[in-house]
Each structure stands twice: as C-alpha cells, then as structure tokens.
Length: 355
Image (cartoon, rainbow, N blue to C red; front, side):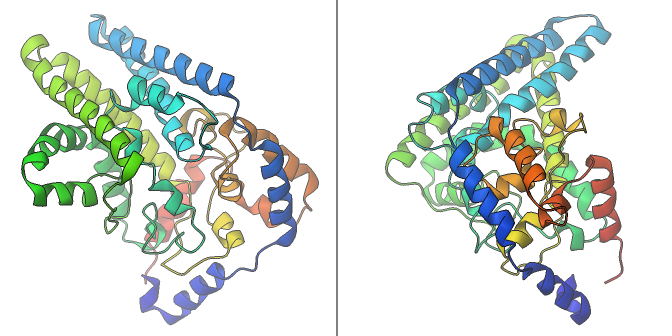
C-alpha cells in the first residue's frame, strides 16, 4: 500500500488534491438544473419491459428441455434482469414524489424476487457521493483496489459469484433467527444489510418511515428466500439452480462493472470534486458493449459523480453537451475510456507493482 512508500504516498496525496476545474463544475451545475427531471414514462416502460423479458427468459431457461435454447434464454435473463436490477441505483437519487409508486413497484417486481430490496442500497449509496467521504475509510463503496495485492481482484469477483447463496442465508436464515435473538439482529442490521464493498462499513439502525419500509421489504425477501429453499422439495433442484446461476452471472457482470467504475487509486485522502471525477470512469459511445454491462446510465459513472441528481435517460445528452462546450484540454475528457478490457488491464497491472 502507498502509505508504506513516502514517494507513492506523496503522489497519491497530490492526486487527491487536484484543484477543482471551475469551468467543468460550472457547466455541470447548469446541466443539473436543465436535466434534473425524471421522466416517469421512460422509467416505467424501461423497468417493466426489462422485467418482462428477464423473468420470461428465466422461465424459459428452467422449462425448456433443449440445452442450447435454455442457454440462450439464460443469457437473455442475465442481461435483462441485470438491467432492471440496476434501477436500484436510480432509486437512491430521484427526488421524493418524482416517480409515484416506482419504488414499491420495482421492489415487488424485481428487488424482492432477487433478494436485493432497495433498503439495502438506499441510505448507503448516497454516502459514496458525499464529498468528504468519497474514497475514504467511511465510504461504503470504495476500496483502494488498484493498490492491493494481485489476488485481491479474483477474490473480488469470486465473492460476487456467491451472492445468491449469501442472500438466501441473509434473508432465509438470519432474518428469522435475528427476530428471536436481539444481539444477532443488531449485527445483521449493522453488517449484513448493505450492498457495499467496504468490509469495515457499518450502518445505523433504521428509523421512522424508512424503518417501516425496511420491514416490509425484508419480510418479502425473507419469504422469497424461504420459498426458494422449499422449491427443492416441490420442484427438484433445477429451478433453484437455474435461478441461482442467472443471479450469480448477473452479479458477476455487475462486479466487473464495479471494478472499472473507478480507478480505485485513492487510499483514504479526502478528494476534491475534480479529483473524484478523474478517479471515476465514463465509457461513452461509440463503444456499444457498455450498453449491456453498464446499463441504465452506469456507462456515465464519472459524469454521474458530477451530476448525481440527473436521471439516467438524460446523461447521454449531458455528456454530449459537455464534450461540445468544454475546452479540448478540460479534465472532463480525461474521464472517458474506450471499454472494460483496457481498464481491467490497468488495474491488474497496478496491483502487480512492487510497493
């Protein structure tokens, strides 16, 4: 880690303290005012269509006997369910009252059946956007992955592949047990109730309206987990294994996307907004594959850190506007990359450097 090398530590502190680019931040603020309104028609139609395709394809993967057709159905299910699951990110940012019923609808159609109810992300992700928390030990969604050992990256992906097993244990076992054992309940709430990557992150117990929302979402996910366990006795192993395979694959895709969402080069120093942007990643057009592995606006992750209030369907327009209006030497252009492969190679090479 850089803290053991004075030269590297100094370089890291310099990156964290990059002066804010006034022109970029001013342009971003103007765009935030122009594009901050979420369009319910886009949100609902996209969410419902993706869910319909995803669940139908999953049913096909379970019910179709032809192996090739079943595999195609499974692949479609992975991509469609991954897309609709990614709306959990939008739920954490849209303004109260902007999309009536969308949170409940998403949870009933997607979040609870996939055992990723929105309470697992709401109140967590916004801390990642706090200027004083980003990239520090208090950031639930940050680790200095580029500064870790080479084995850390395969482990990062392996853990994601086990997500469906962990979620069944979390909701099917720990939820009912924790209701009977108060100390376990406190541990479950603090340590096993957040979609985060920072193992030291701990969340507070929910209060008020959020606690009530948490309760019904957790109850629903618990019922789903118990139903999945019980399905083995009613329908055999195939439905559960196919469900878990699709779930695992979509979680691995998301973890790979997370791996290239940032450069992961900060080791705890508070960062300026421009430094946070430059530590984040856009993969804009003309690249086409990011539309599949970074859906629902996630391909503009660096831009999202400048414009967290702008809904996903407006980020492409905002990006085009910034590219057209900012100077050629603007730091905004330094946050744009061609695709996943060179980014994975970059972080992998970084982990192999002697420190």
